[in-house]
Every structure is written in structure tokens, then in C-alpha cells.
Length: 314
Image 1: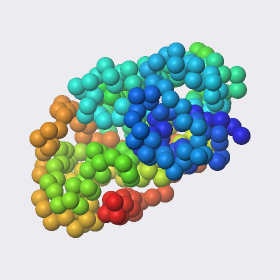
Image 2: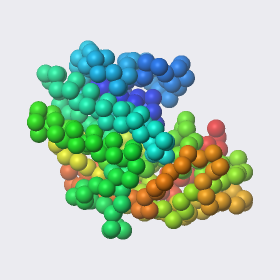
Image 3: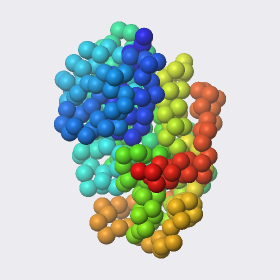
Image 4: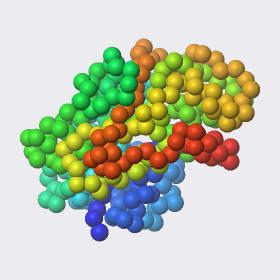
């Protein structure tokens, strides 16, 4: 059975991915050494089918040793600091976690004799400001607008450099915003759903901003396609092209939750300052369709219904 190492294994996508891969691969799940006992909650139901490994991504020596010990055929690097708004106040932390850690893993993978692919989770945030108001293709020049996005783009470039200079087989994923979380409520869809179910208050900082929104199952399927396909040394968008404004999103969730209160246009009083919010981020995923045979399967309204139902039950 082929071995696979997944970083960020207790995070949103990582936890769903390791559960999906368990049984098909010998799965090793990387968890931060400093995590508390509750960190494993998202993968509790898979612990008998995976091997939990502990280490810090930013520790170069520890990562070299761990990766050599596991000797994976595939390394899926989804571990990251992901809250864009926090990156403005903590730029060095995001640089170290999202860029330097990727460099550590790249060089660890280069030491492996039977290594097949390094799958790196980037983000559509790297596109930043663009003149076009239609779904972005991979050929556009990125213009990142946050320390988070800059660190991700720098990591992308390092991965691509390693492919050219050292022969690293890789695939870079630029995915859109994903929803369907079961353990966190700080991201836009889960925030709106849980706030409306509680009866408010509900804040909407950027009602005119347009985003793609992808349900978690489609995101996990994207990584499975990246792993199993023969494609390598490519940058690929994973998105829906649904181009929904945050104001429209709030109204859709209002209808599903029965919320009758007011949606306040503005950030919550304790919200970390965010000097720039990209007005438009949407992805053309036709390359993923042609190269990997991947396309999103869950329409937005269906995904929102599933998310609302989950949080209602919880």
C-alpha cells in the first residue's frame, strides 16, 4: 500500500482528507507538537486507520527526520495559517508557517527515493486585484493583497523552482473559499449560519465582495484527483465560478435559517483590522476538468442546506 503524509491533518480540509484517504493508502497525519488533546477531535473517528505523527512545520530538522522516517510516496501539504485577516497584524507568523515551512517540506521530499508527488495547497487569494471581472484562469499574473497571499505565492514559486532545479514532482492547487466546517465558526458561511441560528447579531463587513464558494466534499475530491492523476508540475484552479456576493450569500442563508433580524453592514467591533479586501475573486476551473477530470458536484444552495442542517442539529 502506498504511503501518504498529510500536513494540517486536524484542520478543516486536512481532517476530511485523511478520513477519505484512510484505507486506500497508509495515511500518516501530521499534528503540531504543541496541540492540546482536543486538536485530534476532527479525526477521532479515523484514529484506528491512520498513523498520527507530531512535529512543527517550521522546524527544519524535525521535518527532515519525520519525512525520512515516514518515507511517503505522496506529500499533501495543506497545513497553513489560513485566517487572512490575522495576517495583517502577524505577517512574520504567516510567512514562517506558509512559506518557510513549505521550503522545509520540499527539501525533505527531495531526499526520498520513491517519491511520486508533492501536492501544495495554495489559494485563489494569490490572484488579488485583477482588472477582469470574470473567473480567473491560471495564466493571469498574480497580484496578492495580503501577507497571507504573498506567503502562499512565495511558497508556490519555491515549489515550482524545486521542480525545475531539482526535479521535484508537484501539483499546486489554487482553491476557492470552502465551507461546510464542523468545528469552527469564524469563516464567512459558518459565521453567518451560526449567528443567524442564534438570532444575531449578524455583521457583514464587505457585502459587495464577490467570491466563489465550494462545498467541502468537492474540495476533498479535488485533492484526491490531484493525488491520483498522472498530471504533475502544474498549477491548477479548483473553483465553482458561482461568483456570489456576500450580500446575496447572507440573504440565501437568512432564508434557510428563518432569521428575521437585521444584517449590519460593517465588521464586528472586535474584528481584526483588514486594510484591503479583494472586491472580486472567482476561478475558472476548466483546466482541472480537462487535466484531472475534476468538476464541482455540489451546487451552492445544496451545500448551504447541508451546512445549515448540520449546525441546527449541533
